[in-house]
Image 1: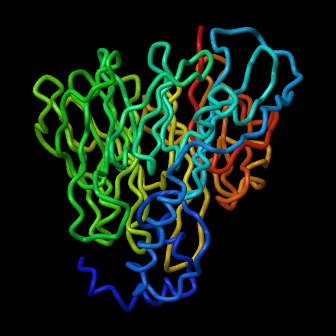
Image 2: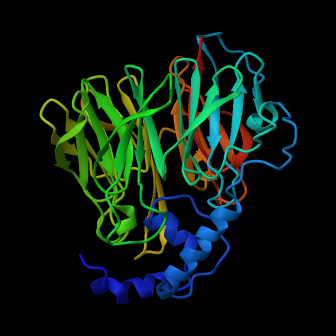
Length: 418
């Protein structure tokens, strides 16, 4: 598929669609909404302005953040477990420098917004676009995409310990004392000639980069099975010529041993209890639909294509929870769906894990997590991407327990355990 061959069709579907929406749909990054899009021919000029906005908001200091105001959100009785609570990373609209961190405390049933700024007054803000949040040992890691850094905090206090730099970093995972971070490397821009991305290895004691390896185009989420690291390549900057591969890295040699051809525009990877790998494809937003596939990591072959859309997913036990917000330029609208898949039988067992009708209230599901012990289901709503979102808590039966207002674009949850 060539860019020039599809120009007429793109002109038709992009007419009147805002440039930030194009960034979100095509380049797979959160949006900001400032400039109406009139013609795709002004893309380069607007990107230049966008980069200026980035530079304007690049500093994380010199700003006062309101003191946290804990809110009691759940007065129901629940058993005490090894899960103490969870952090929620709000991505913040791209260019706004508004990535923020919230915390829900199980013991007090309180939800506290913007805790990072009060604990770290010399830094104040996390930065621009929080793209991933993980806990490893006694450290909390936040990947701040457009600020080109990974923030390292004490998991108990969110006190900043350090940060390490990596251009256009996306996701993080861990193995044997090492942190692995995917990076687009390329600047934020449409570019059919955009360079391949990398996966970088960092020491979790010194936080120094040890090794890096070139993978596919615009790599996203990673998963480790045995001694193999899998990374999903999207090719989002090379629209409409998306990547369709998973790069497989040998952790001993830190080289790409081979690639697996899967589907257009890959994003998330999740490993089930059998070691199989579930991968989401976003399609091309026209005629190739989003899809969910499963790969046998013993053979690195596709086992099954489910034929259902998948934007985000979460494994809990032998269940894979999936939601999708699927945009299609031909229809000009989003379609929101939910599902549960039995990973043992590899069958769809439910087409909606929200059973009380609350799904009708959720405009743009954006984050998804399952409490590993209580099995409570957490879903975030990004709403319009520029105003505070909402976090919903459902019990294991899919009935709403409570909800609370979050920061802008609530997205990534990390559970804190004893």
